[in-house]
Amino acid sequence: MAKTYKIATIPGDGTGPEVVREGLKVMEAAASKFNFKYETFNFDFGGERYLRTNEVLPASAIDDLKKFDAIFLGAIGHPDVKPGILEKGILLKLRFDLNQYINLRPVQLLDERFCPLKNKKPADINFTVVRENSEGLYVGAGGNVYKGTKQEVAVQESINTRFGIERCVRYAYEYARKYSRKKQLTLCGKTNVLTYAFDLWQRTFAEVGEEYKDIKTDYAHVDAITMWMVKNPEWFDVIVTDNMFGDIITDLAAMIQGGMGIAAGGNINPDGVSMFEPIGGSAPKYTGMNVINPLAAIGAGALLLRELGEEAAAGAIEKSIREVVTTKIKDLAAGKMGYSTTEVGDLIVKHL
Image 1 (cartoon, rainbow, N blue to C red):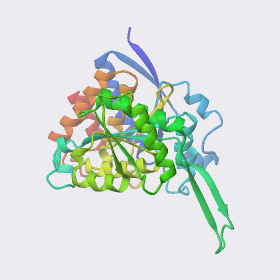
Image 2 (cartoon, helix red, strand yellow):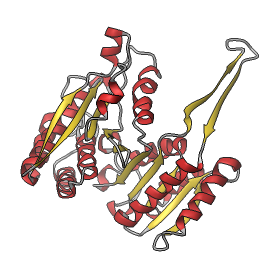
Image 3 (spheres, helix red, strand yellow):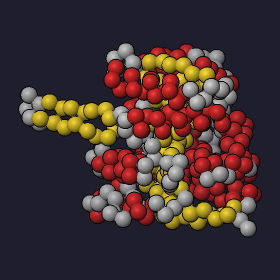
Image 4 (tube, rainbow, N blue to C red):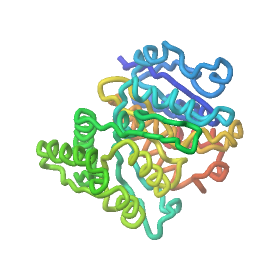
């Protein structure tokens, strides 16, 4: 009997609903091919709801979402809503309250035509960033004193716990053991300046590593990571880092893999409900034009299925994305693909 999954969808703002539609189209085709089923329930969280109700999330949202097997998110960000309200009130709240302590960002160049780096080929850009997703500077610890005066003081503290670091590092070691090409794990930090936080990160990394002798380890400062990611991305296999540094280096990683249109990510709670999304944002200027690239959302759907244990379906979707990108797509940017948003989704289904 086919297994049935319950998936919560949050299409969100801007072009979010358009890319979620294509992601679900592909997942439906994969479900038929690989003998599983899924049911979706739509949540209208986002800018339009906030402008209509002045409510970012209803009180029941977290408990409601905990009842699902996974969450498929389109995009959050509305031009008529002040920056920070939706991002903190929806994205960060869901990550924190659902204990999605891992942000997973596979980075793979599918076609050298779309790489801004000279002479780099798909074999050179194929790594994964494991970002701690529930601590660090994003906790919001700190505050203002004398706000609005010339004496104003602003303090933002980075919170790092042994418990939070260890579970992130352990996830990265396990991921490297199961999926990495070179069985190599790099810790990205700043031990020479952020001596308290990254001393704890480095000691934890080394201690947990004693249990994973099959994994090669190394360390690089975050500024060196950004330098080598441009010059020698082939050096990297799996990178583990804190919340802020992970946020920064994954955007750079998205650019060298071809841009935001192809970049998918997951917010993972290995023991609970995880959330998957394209990382490019809502792109409001393209809303309703049927020109946005849906490949990142389709890739996020593949990550979702892999987390649910549907490895064959996830692999088939990723293979189809690769074939379409290398044989059909003219450009990964919105409006330049040579196909509409809907047509790209159809191509992925066809190649499945």
